[in-house]
Image 1 (cartoon, helix red, strand yellow):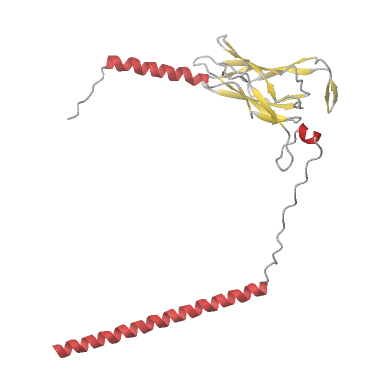
Image 2 (image 1 turned 180 degrees about the vertical axis):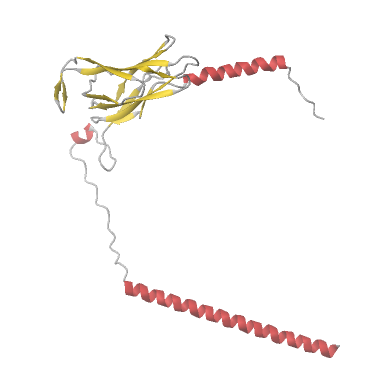
Length: 260
């Protein structure tokens, strides 16, 4: 009733190869240089990590450069040592001195370069940094990154990803959010401009009287007594049922003897 449909191998193999090619082409494109976590509070100091994947199948990554936004100079840039890698901080003079907890700074870090190590194909490396004080007058920081491979290939992760079109090499972006208080509520500039924040009502306190230990003990005693009475009644009822069944059995036996 049913016939087998056989597809010639010469037609099937090209289709399989084409599908595999599409998957291989789409796989590496999803791996980008990113900054994690992707959000931080405005005006604070945050520990971040640049995640750098190696999308090449044969060549290792040997250098990573991260450029700091020149329009938002930071007073604090600190890096965590990465085994096998050397780090270099390049500085520049800002348009105006940057205020910090240690006074005015006439030089700020403009680029971080990691070199000397390797990221093998299909692996990734994270580079930890501490940045502060994060600006309060912008909602994001863009870190353009350049990735260099051992075979000389250079990939520039510098494209703007804020538009509708998704770029092929987006730059890492750190989203900045309003600082939060101890209760997890955000404080924005507009809230303070309109006057002090409204006072939240104090949490309601239960006015029910605390349980009396003596009363609780009496209640437990009454409950225990009732349970014992119920058990005794159940025992007596079971015994009465046993006697009734026994008597009925004897009557049936007597009738059967007379009849026989």
